[in-house]
Image (cartoon, rainbow, N blue to C red; front, side):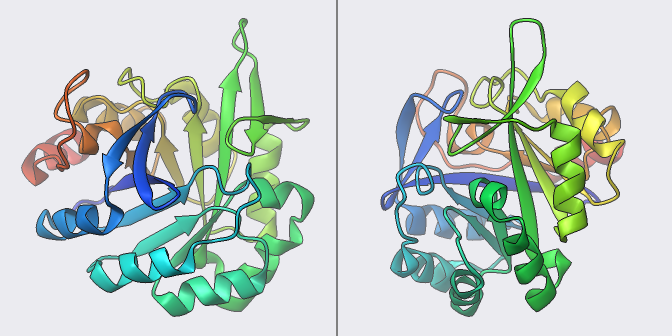
Length: 254
């Protein structure tokens, strides 16, 4: 088995899967349940579903869709998207998900992270941080699908989430997301050098060598992948796929 997890990060909008570019334009990918069936066949180790507009649009969690996904899925699942309470988390875990991803709602209620971590264990909570770079490379943290700028430093916030009880961090580069240009290795290294919990790199994977780079140079413990596993190639049509295990072994562990 790979030492480094490679996690398809699948974006939900309403009851469909979509793929965004820099958190803006999005394309329709397909039906979430059918996509899960394909990933079952491909023997993927873990899946992450993020309802990307749920917090921004103040939408309730679609528990029925999550049930349909969990009923088809053979692998560990994580979900993020407007989780507001311990009760929300309980329902999601009862459905069959193993982890909750929390981003926007942590800013107004950091105790939410602690409540879920205390009840289900630290390994059950993933703290998610979305980061944009300004013209001069200055990093800013955003919430609500990149629409609300938060007045906090990325490393400071990562440490606060760690102290609150998250078991790992998902760090997403907004500018790299959907770009196929590779992860923001500098950003990932900044965070991995500052926290003790595992860090999942997200945003920009365009070929498997990018995964090896962010693990070896950035210190990432896991890689989230989007475009790489839902398109044939850059600029081409939808094709749900997963990199060859031997090739992943070569770039990640070689």
